[in-house]
Length: 272
Image (cartoon, rainbow, N blue to C red):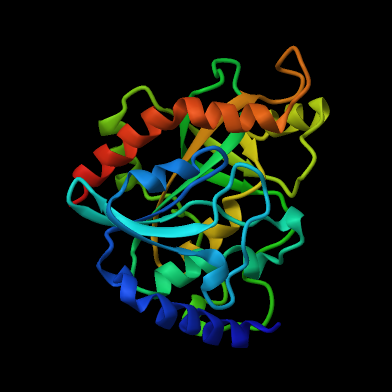
């Protein structure tokens, strides 16, 4: 699959989703593990399954939804992806970012990327929310690999300001108790070893997970404004007493759903 054909795939998806009015949405949200139910809270919502959108891959991971939901929050129209696909499922980087690229190509300019992550700071505990100020792409891959297609951004996009400081500031005005830090994206699906956790902490990472970085790279190249939130579902290996379990991730997401909902509602209310 060449990138030259990816634009045609995106345009086919955009055309199929035209009845949802994506171009009128003021924000798109990607919901991470355990957070998929927020989409059901939208007013005047309309939804479509990923599997019904041309060329979109569908999530296979427990805790992730598989719908695009368009509706209103506080009078603002938003689009929610209730899940995402990951490289560790066997998808390529291009496939992993196809949904967000579709929303950007449809005209949405602002994105809030959320995920569940392991905390790397001693001050963190399960249930904390960390605003992403920067990221480390340690997956060994990128959605920009392959032949260059100008419609998807420049050949060598600048990444000095991937995460929009103004949009992040609006999150802090809603919830002053947010943490702030660097998100490290790894390939997965195994959790990190204690030695890897120490390495990541020494690199300045505040949280570690298995998603988000490719979406950020692709959207930044397409000129989108990004904010990100990591739900700290557990402390990373070597920082907690017991072994890590994916069920903890889902449970932490469910418990933090109310705070996340309040954060998103507040962000929408404060959008210019």
